[in-house]
Length: 294
Image 1 (cartoon, rainbow, N blue to C red):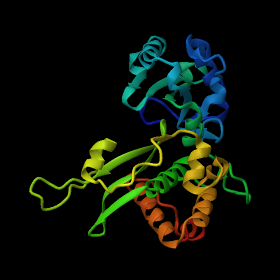
Image 2 (image 1 turned 60 degrees about the vertical axis):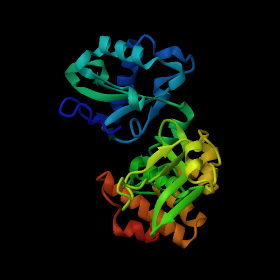
Image 3 (image 1 turned 180 degrees about the vertical axis):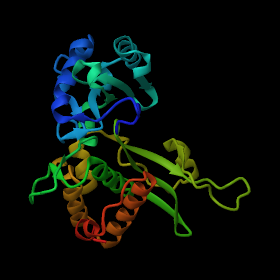
Image 4 (image 1 turned 45 degrees about the vertical axis):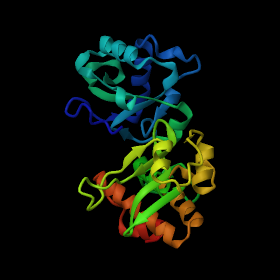
């Protein structure tokens, strides 16, 4: 996502170029139709094909239907080794693909995103960008999808089953983490003491459920291991349908209605910290006042 894997080699792609570029890929990747119902045009993630231009083209693929190593080799044969960057640890393959099938027109980054197909439609959803937002339009936003998704991640981080606090700091937690490809995954983590026992490390350490309960026998175990259904996840997080979680504006309104003041304040703090860590632009004061209520 973002189109920076081939910086200086690829360019932004115009909305009118997306369809013909994807068609060229479909016609030249012989194994694209391992899933007989798959149409790559209907499997686009993010902003490609929605906004006037996009930094890359992201394609949703069911992880259970493809051998990623085989796909990477097929793409190397088609595009050349310099134009294919497999990321097996992230279940992604980044590629530099000729725009409209013609290298003379430039290259665009195309990312194959392997995961749960229905979940990724939700987790990577990007609204239509607009400067003239009509009230009630849940699929258009002043902000790109990153802002909506980071707020979802902040809400998920707040929604713990069990938390242990020491000196006003969270030192142990049982709760879900929002993963783009795998859903809401429940994890057991703590911040262990340093070897000298004087303080706790900054980073959380992950445990199995049994390991965690051996350390914290009073901990409440997870509500689930994984939530992969967007409807179930949105009901758990905010008691709403996924259609109300598609833009930063609509999601923030749902958050404000669902959580009380102190919880809302904490979630917004987590959210702004996430944006800061990503070096993403922080929403302006007027937006924070209207939608985040801070």
